[in-house]
Image 1 (tube, helix red, strand yellow):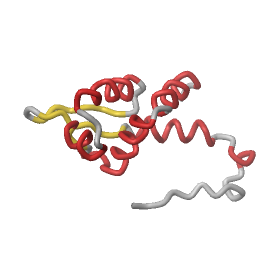
Image 2 (cartoon, helix red, strand yellow):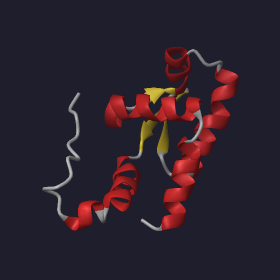
Image 3 (cartoon, helix red, strand yellow):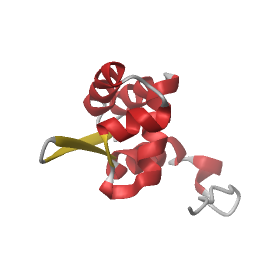
Image 4 (cartoon, one colour):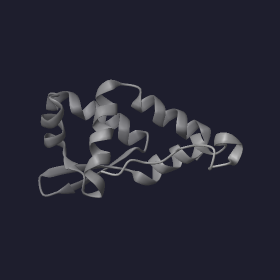
Length: 106
């Protein structure tokens, strides 16, 4: 990943509602969640959600798919993992045994 892509993704996440949306979609996995369900789960009005979805989508952090009359959003795990790899590329001078970057499983 290039630094400008990471900056754009981090900028998109630097807002409480968008961060909450992204974290919820990460938990949902590849199946994602319908836009209305995301709004309901987070207690955000559906009218406000489209702006947040657009920002996250533009940054490449989420992807949308239409299923009938519903739009499902899911986290773009390739972009998320690329961003994490970029940020930890030189962690502890390249010695992974020094850093504890373990990931908690759901």
